[in-house]
Amino acid sequence: MPEVQRAQRESWRALIETLQQAVQQAGGSGWTMLLECDLLRLEKRIDAVLLTDRAILVLEYKHGAAGFTAADLAQAEDYALDLHDFHAASRAWPVVPLLLCSEAAPPVNQWPIFHAVTPVLRAGRGGLPGLLRNIQASIPTPEQPLDPAAWRAAPYKPVPGIIDAARRLFDRHDVTAIASARADAANLTRTTEAIRRAIRGAAAAGERRVVFVTGVPGAGKTLCGLHLAFGGGAEGTTFLTGNAPLIAVLRGALVQDAQQRQGRGQRQPRREARAVLQNVHRFLEHHVRHPAEAPAEHVVIFDEAQRAWDAAQAGRDTQRRSSILTLSEPGHMLEIMARRAGWSVIVALIGNGQEINTGEAGLREWGRVIAASRGSWQASAAPHVLAAPEPMQRLAEDAPSWLALDPALDLRVPIRTVHHDAAAAWVDAVLTDQPEVAAAIAAESPPPFVLTRNLAALRHALRHQARGLRRAGLVCSAKAKRLRAEGLGAQLQGADAEVVNWFLRRWPDVRGSDALEVCATEYACQGLELDWVGLAWGGDFVRGPDGWQARRFAGTGWQRVQAPEARRYIRNTYRVLLTRARFQTVIFVPPGSSDDPTRPVAEADAVAAYLCRCGVPTLAPETSMAPCQPMGEPLLL
Image (cartoon, rainbow, N blue to C red; front, side):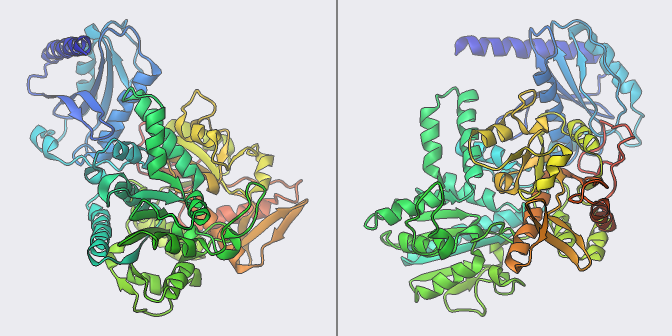
């Protein structure tokens, strides 16, 4: 450890001396230099931020380095992107990432256009003064110079991705300060406190209670649950989900972080992650097999509880298992948690309109089993659970005596889409045949979607937009069988190592999502997210005379889905896919083929025309990509 500390001190001393000399030679006597700026994101710190009168320079210093590696360039760019997106005083000024390698030969920089976040500029020790002078000379003098004091006082509030948040929570850090980049973070804070209040009340009264947390896609339900599970709730709280890919990816990320950042082995972090992140199906099966065993937890968080199985699905045998369940999953959950002495709480996280598979019971089944408990169980939920338009999403048909209403238990503000509050509302309008409503939302606040009919343009856009350490990937419906004709036949559906690699590996590892070769289906990506998404639209959800038409491919052709429940599942599939991106979704509607009756041109054109009618701008493949396009705004190529 002393050797590491000494090396760090030498690096700091060399950086300070280099910056002092370079700033003096560049004529920056009035500039402000900040060292070791904490980004509050996985313990990352910027080596130095240099504030001129007209720009924010983000410096990453590699002491003794003789070359500029791709990893170091991406790190410097990512710091600059984070400042631009999440620091309140950085969006009005050019943000310039600089990679300084002390022993590197003089590099040749591709000079950028100065707006938003520029490409990374590189410098050796001797070239920094000239580079600083060139930067200053290239940026017009502002009417009002940058105010360093105001910049330092402005809030930095990053919106964490679910994987980043889980890593930070697993390392026993609070994420309240990084809950949202917007003033409406109070929505998430208010809901978290409402859950804690309900838990405290149940413990004090010695009662059984189900706390329903509802919300639009990307509103932070899973983040709330993870916060409770990793120490923000009662002692011994466990996070349960039937979403096997979510468990696999989060466990893999936690073990990876413990190894790479903390220097720990695999065994203990893996055991810790398995204890707090559990598969709900295995949890139920274990306790059904052991009817005299009470759960160790007073509190369990049931993620995506709207997807809990009804009795028919829960009792169905499959090729992989023989079921021992006899009730619906909500029914078994209430029975099992009632075994816990004194009191118990089930925190049920409900994604509105995200049921995507046969046998997913929705809120209605939870209401039925609570009512059947005849007062043994109470519930808390937001008022709208009584007025949802679809019966499956209604907890009860009236205001039952066992239900306490608390508006704070509904998350209405999406935080996944970093700069677009209206994205979830726009998606809902698109999928419920309300193009005029969608167009009005788009006119007021352009949603983070753009349309292309060209697969090469889709990949080109994603590769150029996913800068720094941001991640891109392709998604599609599992039922979009004819995408294979477009070269998108490989689909990611399971919860094995392939899914973990897809979400955690990075290009040039071809297993990572940003290789843009394999599409994650709704089963692989629900509950997870990417920074930039390429959504390939399939023939399973097309426009018909009466609006959206859901279909299933069988044999050599498409068959129209007649059952209302099955149609709803396919529509919800596209709701999931359209809400996976933190920054932007590029929608690829294939051009179709006049020679292939399973891919008619007119059918594809109708989908594209409808999306345009809803306010989606078009991505033009012939126009060159502008790498400095401001993040968070739809990119028109």
